[in-house]
Image 1: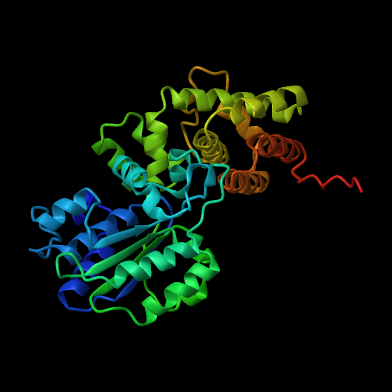
Image 2: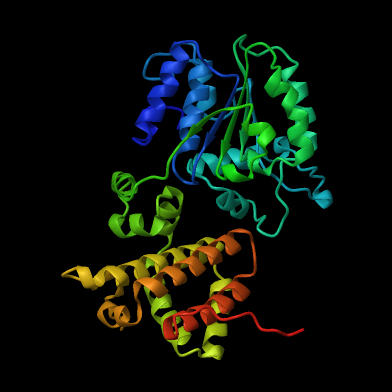
Length: 383
């Protein structure tokens, strides 16, 4: 994970980062941002390892010195990891990263493409308020006042700075504007639009684009994952989602079965069955429901394109009575676009920990109107 060649993604960005290091143009405050699950976190970790390595080369960190060995375990004493947590007074947790660091290391080591949603699920915090709180700023200021353990750089690594509250961000500005000698602040963000302008304006930013379907497919093949092409389509550039789907037993067949049922009950607006299906999904992980909605997105795209392809049937539906040739008759570019917008909104709602049952029930009714009439229903006037 701390090697630049850990994966083959973002070759251009890696090259620029390494070149800047050897040219002595390291910024003391750097922001790596882009969609979740695209590998930017591993590049950021490789950059930190390069900064601290005792024998750096044009390929990156040496991987063999004492510093690199500690970085590989995420235990380097000169690197301070900050990330969103929750407060739990009943367990004497004040919401400091230091209190969760062991669990966070486990999560990252298990999945270097970890997303915010993955982290919340890992610590069973889906219903908790996750933030980077003002106490972290005091912790950072204290740690940066000490001398570095190895006499080199001191690094503050902030994962998901979009969850810095305003007070915390303001207290960090002094370190960003007037850093201590040989101090580097690195931030890795999934949602650039939520970052405070006072932070972004003072950072050197590097954008990491969404992975291509081909990149995800090759990564899955390299890991020996089955159905890499289908999973790459479903993941939409998020390797973490693809790996999580792959880990779920018979997940693709289950997704196909759910989709077949969902389209049938939505089209006929069978409310008892819609509610039952919504309840079933609410009992599964949020990751599964998100994967289901992404699977639905891909299937609807395939339906729109089916008129331009010689082979239209998807082998994933082999064990169901779903027929793409029939489904494509009620899908057209106009209602497909509207349905996909509704699916995107539903994914966002579920990621924000809204009730899966409520989101899916509402979505099913909206999909019914779009399939049957090509319009979105107006909100009920109950006042």
